[in-house]
Image 1 (cartoon, rainbow, N blue to C red):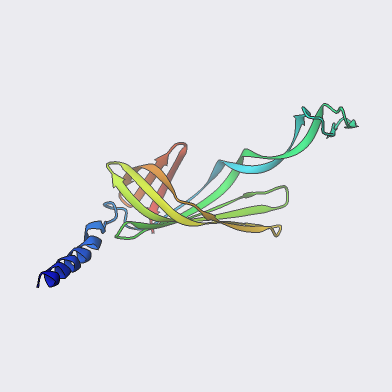
Image 2 (image 1 turned 90 degrees about the vertical axis):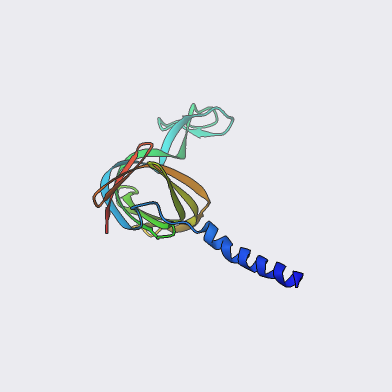
Length: 185
């Protein structure tokens, strides 16, 4: 009889665990939100640079000198560069706090090609006062160039925090230099 009672108590406790951990979405943000904008943003882009030749490798001086002893060498570096970017985002927040955030950015890759980057983040969102915390549990990032290059990678776990302002059917997320205004829809 004692074993049967212990099993019954364990079953009730196990059934209660999901209820204890169930969460609801922060007040007023459950649903589908969209955002579109265009403007200057920092984008990681490859650039050809002249750098000082501090090693013993052969360098290229664009002034015409080639070989050992050249004062500079050319190299390709990836660095943040201000570019015109067209951005569109969709943020879907379920009643239990789960979210899917799709971000599409389009900008020039070079003089003749454009590149489209699509990021899909998934996880759980929580609110503390006027702060929203997005606990990203995973997702993907992919790119496609109009010149034929493509690639995809997995996103790791991370956390993003934003200040929240809501007014009517609008929601503004602000964090660092980012300020995005979403509309319901």
